[in-house]
Every structure is written in C-alpha cells, then in structure tokens.
Image (cartoon, rainbow, N blue to C red):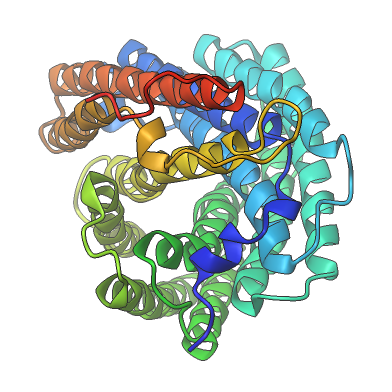
Length: 439
C-alpha cells in the first residue's frame, strides 16, 4: 500500500514556508470573498440576466475568481507542491513579492469593473498579469525538478499551460476596453472561461485533492494510473475546447470536449470517493459535506455547458452556468477544504514557536472556532439556493437576499480565519491559555 498523503505531508516540515506566506494569501482570499458578496449585492438588479460588460456583477465574479479562488490556489500550491515534488520553493522572496503585486492588482480590477473606470481596470490588469506570470515561472521551475507524486505534478503542468492561455485571453479581453486589438471577443471569452475555471483553477483543485482528501480522510494515496488517465482526459478536453473556440468544427469538438471532461470527472470522483470510503476517519463533518456538494455541482456545470453550446431555450443561460461553475463547484470546494487547511497548517507552524524551537503542536481542532463555521455553512448553502432562485425566476429581490446571506456567511468565515490566526500566535508565543475549541 502506498504511503498516505497525510503522512507524507505531516513529515515534510523541512519544506514548510514561513507562516506569513501561505496565510497572507489565505487572508486576502477571505477578505475578497466578503467583498465579492458585497459587490454582488450592489449589482443584484442586473445579476439574474447579466449579459456581460462592465458593472458590479462582473466585478463580483472576478473578486471570486481572481481574489478568492486564484489567491487560495497560489497560496496552497506554494505550500503543498514543494511537498509533493520533494523540493523547496527556489525563490526566497518570490512568493511575498507576487502577493504584494497581485493583491492590489485584483482590487484595482474589481473596482475598475464595478465603476467602469477602464484606466484603473487596465492598471490592475497589468499588475495581475505580471504577478501571475511570475507565479507561473515559479511553479514551472518547481515542477521541472519534481521527484515525487506524478499525479499531482501532471495536474500542475496542465495548470501551468492553462495559465499561459488564460493570461493571453485576459490581455485580449482587457485590452479591448482601452482600444487594443487582439483575439475576437467570442474566441477570447471562450478561451478565458475554459482555461481559467476548468484549466488553471480546476486542475490545481483536482491535483491538490490527491494530497488533501487522503490526508484528511487518513487513507492511502489513490492509484496513479486512473488518476493520470483522469488528468489526460481533462487535458484533452481543454485542447478540444481551445480549438473549438476558434470556430474550427466548433460544435462537434465542443461536445467531445464535454464528454472528455465528464470522463475525467468520473474517474476523479471515483478515486476521491474510494479514499473517503477506505479512510480511517469516516466522519469529516460539514467541511466535507461542502466538498461533496461541490462535486455534484461540477457535474451540473458540465450539463449546463452542454446546454449553452446547444443553445438551450432558456433566457440568460450563461448566468446559471457561471453560478454552478464558479460559486457552486470551485468556491464551495475551496471553502470546504480551506476550513481544514487553515487549522492544519496553523497547527504545524504553531509547534515551531517564536524562535523556531519545536514544541508539542496544538491539534487543528483546538485552533478551530466551530460556531462561525456552522454559520458560514448554513449561509453559503442558503445563498446558493437564493441565487439559483433569482436566475430561474429572474428576481432581483432573490439575488439581493442571496447576496445578503452570502455577506453574513463570508463574515462568519472571516471570524473563523482570524480566530485561527489568533490561537496559532498565542500557542507559538508559549501561552498557557486554554486550547480547547470555542463553540
């Protein structure tokens, strides 16, 4: 039996980054998550049938994709991929420099989109593109010298390739607002959606799952062959979708891409469910209920994408697709795992003490405030239901209610994160205060 991913990660303290690196990314992601719901509330009137262009709905979308999803993906991959590849991050100050460039860039993009200030949007776009290019170089350099976990590495390379396409399409889309010419907008938009959501963020989410799900379930690492087959099908789907976006045999290639993507999803979920079924820890609580819901919504997003390609007779079809893909699959998955990752990493860092000395680390549960997570769990699911109702009924009132509930949930998640950081700092400083969870 192969070594469980959890044991592999737990023994890799020598490759831990300074706590300030991953947690600054996670903290920014938590803040942008709250801002995304606020932006959606501001644009609630347009949300149910949003047809594109600048405005607060598209600002909210990018606060989620760039601000929450990509921010977390960068922070998690900077910490977890060096463990998977068995080598440390090469660039000493690179991760911190990327954060200082990327974070204000995302804020400028969102504000520029929401207020239709194209100059601010362009400035933010330049900062984000430079930051993501630096991250791509850092990630590729780490993968190039990889020594272990071929499944995670394969997903990482597909994510790097997708990031390159994502950046090219982003330059074309953003440039159009200030008079630059590039790819035709339908082509650039199709590439942007496929390679941002399913490619860059999706492949990192799937790849890191092969570490995180077995780790938290206390199970053996999944078999390589079906996992590599899943990665191959996903890569094939992205290539087919990329070709179809240039209007080359568009519909048949589009359908083949969805079939390949569905095959990749089926193989991946079979491995994940087996890891959960065979794990020593059977009860994983509300966090993994969110993960399971996200997997179901990944399938829904592919079904809606097929309907979108076949011009389903439903007004505003892109909105439910974006809702299922971004808020349903990616955001729900991320929030489910992040509430596990944050206390786990905080526990490992707290055991090192203020001067690097090693002590007995606190348990992750002792760093977890459960009540804010319970509030967030209920609010997040209620917000998704209300936004779905808003799309079906074309109701701005339901959209506004969903955004308000989402704001409450994001605020509660923020309380959980701040409390985890406070407890980590207290333990690392040698406090003798209580270490039991606060309900």
